[in-house]
Length: 251
Image 1: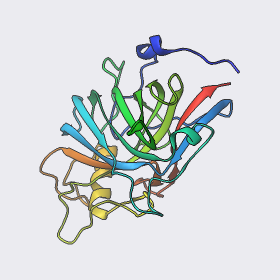
Image 2: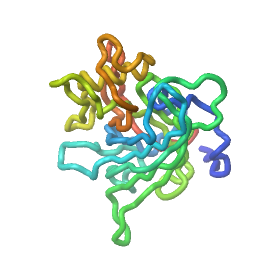
Image 3: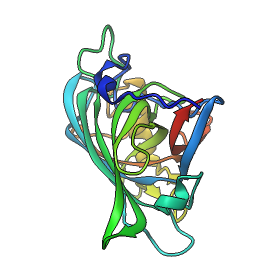
Image 4: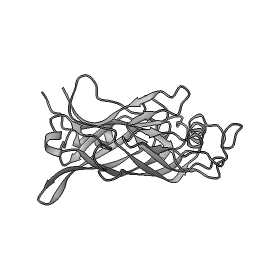
C-alpha cells in the first residue's frame, strides 16, 4: 500500500460544476481502501444570499444535529478507522463559490469549496476527537445531489486521506399552497420530500420559473435545504440515493 501525500495539492483538483442543486457526488472506487464509512449522515444547509437561476457567489453553511437517541441517525461508522473515532456525532462547516439552481456554462472560475469538521464520539483528554477536511463540490449521480470527490482530511483522525460522498438535497422553506408539506428528515436520517418542497426543487433543477403552471409560487430565492446521504431523488421516477461519507486511501 502506498499512501499519497496531497496536502500541498488542495487547490489543484480539476474544476467541477458549481451549481448547488446541479451537482452530484463521487463514491469510493473499487481500488480505494476504505478506512471509515459513515451512513445516513444528515442535517441542514443555509445558502446566502440564496439560490436562483442566476450564477451568484454563495456561502453554504452545513450543520448536522448532535448524536440523537439509540436507533436514530447517524448510524455506526464502519472500517478500521472507526475503532479509533467511534460513531460520527456531527458534521459542520462552510463552503463558498459561484452557485445557482442551474448548472454553470463554460469554465468554472470560482468552484464551490471549503471546510467540513467531523466530530466523533471518542473522547481524549476530555475533548471529542475531531477531523477537518477540505472539500470541493462536484458532479455525480442525480441533479439534486451534491457530492464531493476531491476532498482531503487536513487534521485529526484520517489526516491525508480522501473524503468522498454524496448529499441529497431538498428545499425546506417552500412557499407552497395551504396544506402542502415541507421536506423533512425521517428518524433514520433519510429524506422525506414534501410536495411543495419537491415542486420547488424541480423548478430549481429544471430552471422552470417559480409559479409556473403546476408549481407553487416562490417569493424569493431558496435559502435553506436539508441534506442526507440517503433518500429518494425529487426527479421523476424518484430514484433512490444510497450514499455515505467515507475516508479512503488509494490502493
